[in-house]
Amino acid sequence: MKEATPEELRQRYQELSDDQLIVLAAEASELTPAAAAALEQELKSRKVTQHDRAETGAAVRQWRAEERAEYSGMFDLRKLFGYRLTDLVYFLGMICVLLLVGGIAKLFCHSPESVNRFQKVASLAIFLSYILWRVADAIRKARRKKLLHNTTRQDSVPPA
Image (tube, rainbow, N blue to C red):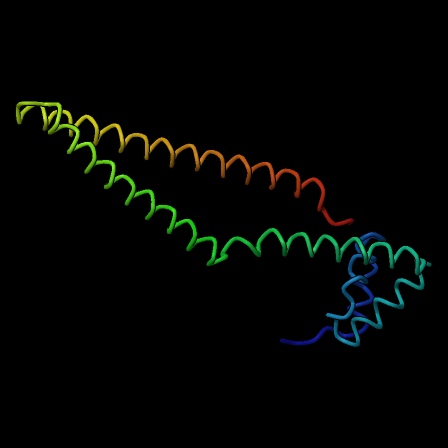
């Protein structure tokens, strides 16, 4: 890819607003030497103060850190393992409860049909409670994510 000439860079920087230039200056370490020099020249010609640059640089760094923090926990394997372990424990607990229900049904129900009916109703109740628990958990996570997204979107918009 062809690198832009210093004149083209100066022309591009002249088209930007002061705020956009200051944000770009906060990330000047990522620019090529020619681009950084053209940016510095444009900032001097517009008489942008060092204080403005430092203040905006701090705000941009803070915004970047918040953005990284928000996404860093998304794929945390320990959390994922913990969720799956919780599901496994819940599943094993359901099996234990079903075995207990079967024993209770055999003690109190005298006919095989009533034992089967009791076990089916108990199994359905346990399965539905598991489904309701998962739905409630998904709603809670969606609300938290929406709340987090709304607050970070309003608070972490970088200064333009």
